[in-house]
Image 1 (tube, rainbow, N blue to C red):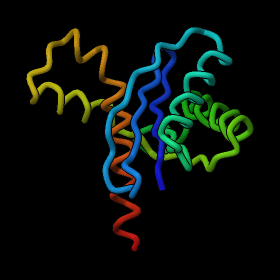
Image 2: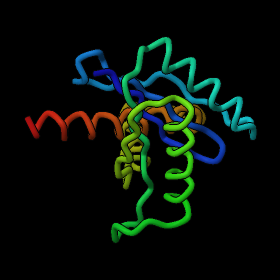
Image 3: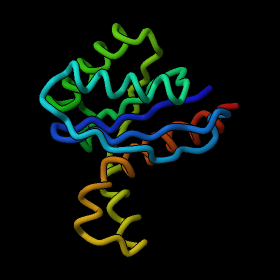
Image 4: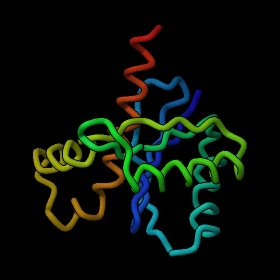
Amino acid sequence: MRWLSLDLGDRRIGVAVSDPLGITAQGVSVIERSGSLKKDLELIKQFIHSYEVDGIILGLPKNMNGTEGPAAEKVRDFGKILAETFSLQIIFWDERLSTSSAQRVMIAADVSRRKRKAKIDQVAAVIILQNYLDFQSRRI
């Protein structure tokens, strides 16, 4: 099963995809949000079709105490739209600390501050997806 992972932000959406066996996650792109939901959905549709995606993992921003705030509500609303638009399984996955983990990985790789800013959402999407895939592999 091939998964698409989205790290939804107000300005950018990080995109990652799993291999066809659902073992590893690879960064694909960062969608610069246009302010138009229709355009954002069209770009996501292109990823769904070109990678033949079976489902979508959406990073769910929870508070450190596990509660959900306004940002999580936005993601859940976006997930409903994705489910209605593409008729795919949508899974919400706890994304706590994914951005800080992505930041640490890129700093360790000596990525410049400017490049980190451009890629942080993509790397966070990879981390979210890989965490989900690892969890699923332990359940088997």
